[in-house]
Image (cartoon, rainbow, N blue to C red):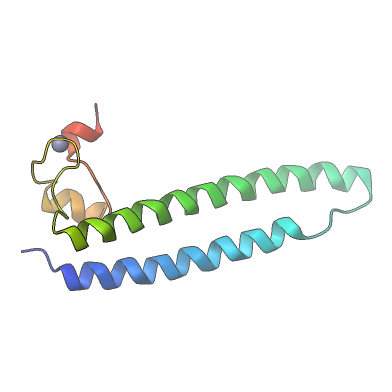
Length: 106
Ligand SMILES: [Zn+2]
């Protein structure tokens, strides 16, 4: 039996953590670049890494919001593609999984 209340609470906690992380990254990215050229090169690389991290966090936020929407619609745990159960084991590992393992691996 899937405990939707617990899952919703976990998702909300995770969203808070992720939003805080995105805010932090945004702040780092906004920091003025060092005028020294050599420093500037490494800083640009650091910015790329930060943008990558931000992208990952934003993607997870979108997936979690979609999963919260599925909980609301009463279709959480059903594969968005084939309608079969996603499976409790898979949801335990990836609670925001929208597809069963066979659709996700296609
Ligand atoms: Zn499926």
